[in-house]
Image 1 (cartoon, helix red, strand yellow):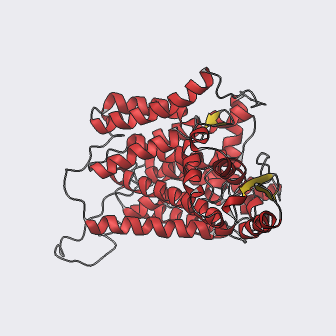
Image 2 (image 1 turned 90 degrees about the vertical axis):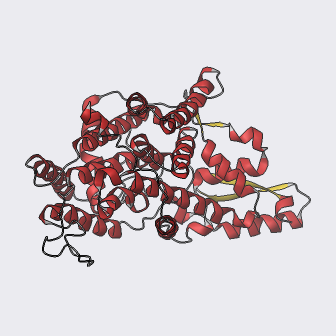
Image 3 (image 1 turned 180 degrees about the horizontal axis):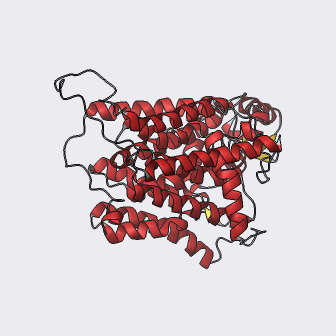
Length: 455
């Protein structure tokens, strides 16, 4: 099975990882997290809290015990990672809660991007092409109406990073620990990773090492928690309605929403076309919509043709695996609720970009033989030969689309500043003989703040 085995490339030879490289990676994570935080409209990510982060996770952390909260079910499954973050945040002064939760969400997302960057190196081979599959985790031009530096929706970029972890074979112990911990974070926080079971089973069958066993153990343990909760009646999905098992509808929605919005973003396609609770719907000019949809698919078709005629050097196993995983994640999530929610587009969209990166991978380009000793960063040294042009065009489009969709108004930008709400609770607790005060941040969320935390 040479094609299948190429999905799990051997790790580099054991050796000391340069401290400089690790430092640059950590610096990139910090910079990416700061960039993500800058995307939230005013009052800003550091002075607002996302809906479920406040109403469910922070509220429970402030008012209930750690033991009760950590395994509390929400929407039929557990959210171990977000609840753990909220519990840690609750240990700090309440005035810091909004900033700490947002920083944690941005940091985890940027960390996911770092994993995708490192894991994709054996497949894509060039750092600038690795950025195609890593940078969009913090600059994705869609779903901002439902995912905005919040811990509640970390499961959706987490689905994408699980795809890369399933393929990644880290050589160092610290990297192996990161892979295991990231797997546990995602699978203990969502039941949706069950869709990726075939990929993890294939990894377990093909690769026989301890890192694989630990990763698969973390994956199985997380999903086992969710299914055990369902079996024991501790969690239920009975409130989920409107399932729709229609293959033609799924294909149509994927073709008209996921691919076009991945390549050209939401703003040019009329925005998300929904509020925070509703499905994606077309807005604006039908002609513009149709034109962008056709153009997006022409981009995909062009990448496929270039790969087939060997103008580029495609990694076919990666392209096929990402196509199947993206389609499966899209179908598995939208059929369960009967509509296309923006947050459900996150992982499939990122996998569309992975497919394009795999198809547009350029051929090797060596420095001229006449100058073997040169140290200059020439185009050849960067792998920027003729076959790199399509990938560079894709990157240029991605940069423009990311800039156009850098910010988007959502319920977070309409909420009250957290500092005002804490001041309100402080005043109420100081002027009345009460144990707690409920603050309403806007829309439907509220947080009960114990008075002993603000007096």
